[in-house]
Amino acid sequence: MNSSKIIDGKVVASELRQKIKTLGSDFIESVKSKPGLAVVLVGENPASQVYVRNKILQTKEVGFISYEYKYPENISQEELLNLIKKLNSDLAINGILVQLPLPKHIDSVKVLDMICPSKDVDGFHAINVGKLWTGLDALIPCTPLGCSILIKRELGDISGANAVVIGRSDIVGKPMSSLLLKANASVTIVHSKTKDLESVCSKADILVAAVGVPNMVRSSWVKKGATVIDVGINRIEVDGKKRLVGDVDYENVIGVAGKITPVPGGVGPMTIACLLLNTLNAARAQHKMDAIKLDSLF
Ligand code: GUN
Image (cartoon, rainbow, N blue to C red; front, side):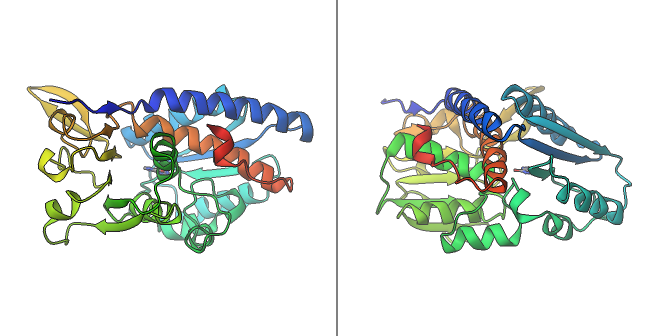
């Protein structure tokens, strides 16, 4: 059986961080200040704690300044909104990230919409969402941006390719579809109500899975030679051992797909690298400099 090419997100992310570090040094030299990223964490969600720890570590590693704001679960919405207002007007802070999910008593949409769009390094603000869909320069959500970079590196021009995105979340599915459309792919979004998922997915040249269901995409769902991008990060237990698996049944799809991202080590590392890229681009825009062209990064 032919084996798929494994797309090594760790290597690509590490190269990207190195380039960001170099571009960041040029930026620091010219404006005499370091890009600053504020990360806000509310509560004790273990997965969020791990993500935030890694975001902070890597921010420092590329030579940017990390500002950390950690609050207990019971912080009021008003306190959180006041913090965002303060960060919005702080010139040392170029990017603001509020780790999701937030506790139930807090309206996430209100909090995210309070972030100044020019500092919205997650790309979740309605202004950035609108700009992305209308083709204007925007801060783009980090995970789909990371997937796009992997796809561009692996496939080059994807004009006319059939792309299927499984999942319609605001964080991944919707912005991913927009980016694929911008690259001239024919895009289909499928979700839990779609009829005959398998038949739609099996026609995809590019299949992006972002649903959060362990091993959902079986080998029969994948066209021979397709590029499969697995965004899922699911913690499951197999034979009493904790394991991290994606949304794709990796062991079986690996002989069918042409190229595939593993979990862990595929899309995951790209997300944080893209957060750093967004932080640098936010800082550049705030100093009236153009965004870094994606094509110049690889
Ligand atoms: N929680 C899960 N993914 C993300 C993300 O990309 N950004 C933020 N802020 N929270 C998340």
